[in-house]
Image (cartoon, rainbow, N blue to C red; front, side, top):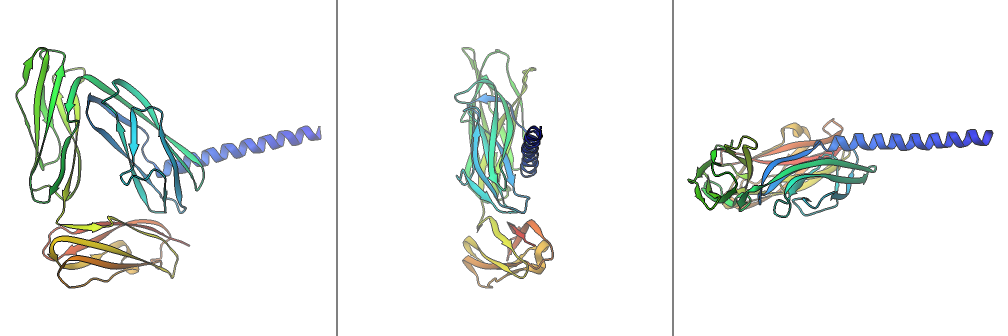
Length: 337
């Protein structure tokens, strides 16, 4: 009887441990990944579709992403820096690009994206992915791609749209929110059961520096599926580039400091007016030069004497003489106990 009681108690303890471990894993993975589901909606054959999943370490411990996989080859993924397994220090984040293969696959698609982590403890975060790939609408190429456009210069991209189906099908509107964009849609060409359009998207000189990731929505007279999304991608190359764009200072103990460097490169010589980090004004120091040159390497020191404890994600503001818009750099790290 005593042996039976001991056995039952042991089993109960093990089950309780597994259960609590599972709950703990689910709760901490939910904290670092906000995305609950990915729905690409109704998309055209050949269209480039992409959604972003942010993994942000809001904990005080290092996170290790040990694996990423999908349950269907119709869903693909990549990290912009090309690293599949990486460590995230407190305050750091990474972006996962999730894409749908609309060239090889058609119609209704349901899958799961699984992100596995083995530190600070094991967890597998699953994100449902859904989409419907239309077979009657084809984009060529699959997105509006501006490529690299110099700041203050215009850009242009063209996409051909082909439809096979109802003879009275029509695109009635082209919608987008970015004021720096302008759309021009050709008149339809109808022949042998096919309807062809050409969409020209223009990027004007007012576009701000940085990555352009927008969506154009084609509005059709199809009452069942009136909206068709079309992705826009491009980079407005600034007159001055900052490297790195995310400044990782690591974990700093009170009384200690972390030294990093920021490189600024311009097409013409320039002078740095100031570098500020308002949220860390008492624990931040940048050594800037008043010289005018096309390249500046700026030493920056962060101390652990800010008074706060835990992860931080702040903004470094770099002002250039004669340049109306400041340059912004994200600063991540943590202050330990």
